[in-house]
Length: 199
Image (cartoon, rainbow, N blue to C red; front, side):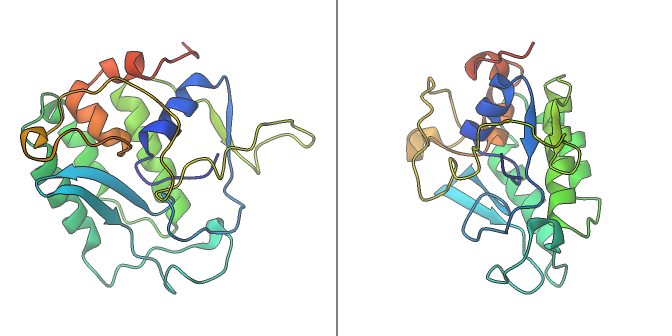
């Protein structure tokens, strides 16, 4: 699987349903992907939060070499946006300090940020990580390549029940968002919704 920033719901479902996962931190960076962006439910509909990158998003390099740009105050913008979107959801206050803590760290590389975010999300759900990087995997390991399965341009194939989202009375239910949306709205039930198999 690819490294994602606040992974989309379908990515997270696949992660939960897999016995073990290899996150490819040595692949070529793919622009216009969830690798450096996530989508949340805002007051005006879907809101995209993008992590700015050194050299722009078009630079050709391995994702392990992609550095985060701090010329903009993106961390403050992302946290304020998440607060504005989810402050009134049932579970936001339970996860607020851990989520806010993400934006208090200054990570040099995108994969470091993404790995930390995944760890926080798993911790919020009281789950243990069951992934490794390509470097940590054993030579000859056989795996199913899921790296191109999740893309903002594609509607994922995951079907799940709708749940009450913020601003739903205005925008209707918005599918295919970051798992952050589901976490703040339904909390621990996220695991049941996504059918965890690796208990």
